[in-house]
Amino acid sequence: MGARGTAVAGDGTILIADFAGARIVSLVPTALDRPVFTDVGGNPQEVAGGSGAAFAYTNAQATPQEVGVATPPGAALRVPTPGTDPFGIALGDDGAWWIANFASHDLTRLTSAGTATKLGGFSAASGPRWIARGLGGTLWVSLEKTRRVARVSGVEAPPPPPREGGGGTPPPRDGGGTTPPPADRARPHLTLARVGRAVAGVRSIVVTAKVDEAATISATLRQRILGKKRRGACVRPTRRLRRARSCVRRVVLGRASGSLNGPGSVRLTLRRRGGGALAAGRYSVTVVARDRAGNRSEQTLAITLRRGR
Image (tube, rainbow, N blue to C red; front, side, top):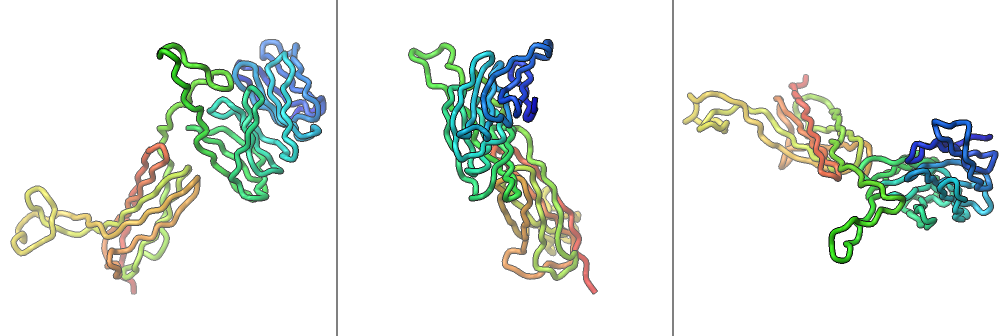
């Protein structure tokens, strides 16, 4: 056979898209010599498992182009999607399959009942090719023509409707009763790099913040200045406090913020409130990244501005 895409179904069955044989081959790991064949016609390209032995597949070489869903040993339910060039496929957190349509620059959502709906929002001629399921109700889509990766969020099943009289077991989710995805508790991965000369007299400090997911990013510029202890606090020195113990104050000079709709980096320019040059001394920049689930990461850069020649 002409094996193309492979996947594993919910029950552990191995699935193979047989491009040359116009079929999906299902193999049970304990009985590899007894495959089950599901004829689908055309030339199936990719396959993705679902609940139990169910699977869905893409078939851009069929006439018309189509996607399909089946549960062996039953026949496949074939859904025409002409002009889409369906390729990559993945099972979403909502229990439905999501297909990357290379020609129509959108996604198809396919339920186990064979209902197909579209999701647009990609740029023209972006060429969605591959798709994968991420954490927390997300999908990742490779856009071949624009050489970018798109993040689709909010792929979650709606809450089941209340049963009459209350109580009882809620109806299963579409796609076979998959369990809700775990809550996103992973902190965004944050890395920092400073840009610019470390000399006194500059009017701003530029920091590049890089994160691995969509997040809002805020930065605070502080200067370390000598102070005096008063009632447990570190305050500005005065004549009356000249004999008090010395301490270090961290004075906030300015703030900046930015946001990212996906993995990437953002440059934050921090300036003194009211303008003016930054004197020689010790400074720090604290950057906080907060993702859409509210998870928070924080890093601090220590910066010393020296007098230039």
